[in-house]
Image (cartoon, rainbow, N blue to C red; front, side):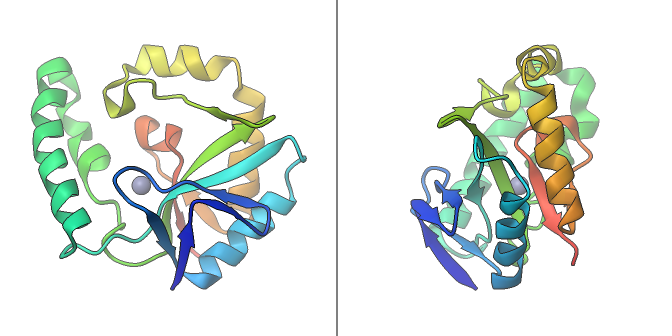
Length: 167
Ligand SMILES: [Zn+2]
């Protein structure tokens, strides 16, 4: 398992999601991420924000607490989307091993944010924000898929590009 700190490593950027200070990722997964990056034009950079997080760490505890709170808020705002709770608030493998990563896109030095209100961003708003960058999103997801990554099927998870390296 590799430990990546904020910065740049072999062309791929790293910015651990708060409150993490590092991203843990399987070496083979990281190598594939570098390969995906190499398929992209220089104006597009992959930014790894989340990888493996042990359940028993302080971070794990923080995630459990914020998940508990998040589910309640989410269900208040979107009672009709209760069926998405497990996809959005489940650990999606992050507590299993370092092959599950969340990736953002940096375009011309600027991070693209498709979820201005995090997972609470409405689907309509997500689509509106993403509309401007459909080509970039497509190119990035295509490169990731070609390198053995599977993108999460839930729209919100797919916007924060949760992907699993399948080898
Ligand atoms: Zn994820």
